[in-house]
Figure (tube, rainbow, N blue to C red):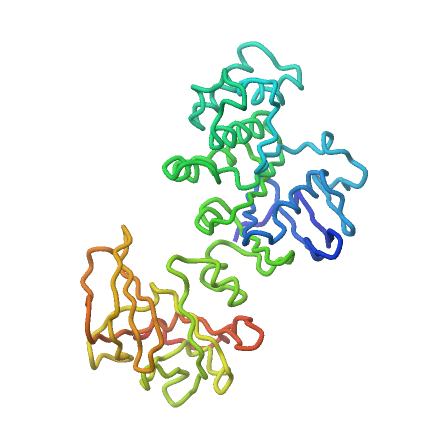
Amino acid sequence: MTERKPPAIEIDAVTKRFKTDVALDAVSLSVAEGETLALFGPSGAGKTVLLRVIAGLVEADAGRIRIGGRDMDDVPPEERGVGMAFQNFALFPHMSAFDNIASPLTARRQSGEALRAGVEKLATMLKIGHVLGQAPKALSNGQKQRTALARALAGGPRTLLLDDPLRNVDAKLRFEMRLELPRLLAREKATTIYVTQDYREAMALGDRIAVLEGGRVTQLGTPEEVYLAPATLSVARLFGDPAINTLKVTPQTDGQGPFVLLSDLRAPLDDGLSHAAGRPCVLGLRPEAVRFTEAGAPGAVAVTVEAETPLNEKTVTLVTTKRGREILVSRPAGTPGPAEGAAHIAVDSAHALLFDAETGARIAPRETTRRGAAA
């Protein structure tokens, strides 16, 4: 494993209240030099507030911010050395798009061809070259957002705070920027906190993801860790489309290992989950962790196909168990599968998740000799 670099941004027990509303509740995070941290969570989780505290635009009630090892107490925003692009654009209304983007460069007394080349390069990448001469009031929201992003990038800051900068961008450009932005940030060696409500964007752009819910960090890890091993049921529900299947179960164990009952049939679990036997749980099954199989195959569970929906690269099928519990099954588009009537499914035990029914915390498998994926 590659050794992580020293933190460029340190957030230590930051708390912020607005009257009786706790927007940030003792949030602690660190971002390594050159790392992109995706700050992900639902609306109202406190993501924008945290960025504004880091930038110095909002004063925290408690806790500390350090950037580059320097304590930011009493350091004004303009001296923090960060580039910012926020949801409200904050463009200078009396300046053209070109001058808005160039403002960090002119502040550093850069001029001439180097300045123009830098602005035009960013404008080309963000596809706003044709509006550089226009004032902000003449721009669409998507163009304003891209102009604000270009301005944040123009000065080549070592620290970037990006607040959902692609929210108002059309789907095609958003997809292209998910590919281009990581390359740009890596080239600039920028330390970035990237706020988004789109889990795909968080997974595509973040070296790590911090999940923020109700002003608290509920999980911090790589995209793979957060998706495959969510810390809580709430985190699991935030990732994936279609959403994760959740079923109330009480695991059991026998000579073959742990299992749950679906349609009164044995659906095996990972060997490491034997300690959850007899405990009220919620079984989490990603739709792609469920597959159609033949009757009589090991672990086959009888279901009824209710509906099938093609979704571009995949086909999603809704099935119900004997007791009427609904399960979504996802398979690659073009692969065979029943469209109606009786069928059988099997669970990939290696990717079945168990959560405590009371606390919602994931029950982690214990180390053991595992069967691996089982039907």
